[in-house]
Length: 310
Ligand SMILES: [Zn+2]
Image (cartoon, rainbow, N blue to C red):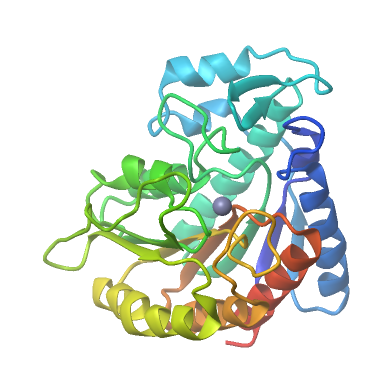
């Protein structure tokens, strides 16, 4: 099944300030890739306008925090700091509204039954907490998508797989009390943000719960894929999700500026292909990290091609 890429061009307006690794160029280089892949008929491509509302994130996020974001009028050339790593300006709001529109489309797509989707947006989301920004993230896209799908289908069984090099602490905190939800994260440990040791792991009667898999620096493709096939895949299969949501961060790549897990795009191809083969009819991936532009493009290409060939 051909993956559908939902691209949110308004994301390029968001900036954390000069020299920051989470830069608008990340999205620009991916847009060039998507243009080429669409021309080769490898993906279907949709450009998403900033037509959503910030209220879409209410529930997982508090109204007062969302109001604080909405009222930010900082100049894009001088974004205000919401935490030491995370900037926000008035140009960040259209970025969030575009991602809300893309996620809203995904909720409708889930109701219609099937599809493989990839949302390309900025800023990433998996560190964002209910009432504060953290680690380049303003709002939590994956947790909000899970929350919205559960709101529309109380019987939904939602598996979240986060393969970003950093632990998805914000997502874990937001979905841990949502019934029928499984959160799995593979990540470098010890590493930012310091959580994800495995001490929080738990499993309900049908496999719901939390599975944090901390990995040492320089894990590499072979060891990573062993763990993926032997631990991640069986847990998702046992859980039998109706929706598989993926926090797709590519900063575990060996050339990344921040991460040190030493993976190559071969792993991302294998993950994309395996999830598409085993997964439920509905799979939605949302871009998280990935800070070497060349490695990011090659990794996203490998992931989407893996899904397309499944
Ligand atoms: Zn990351």
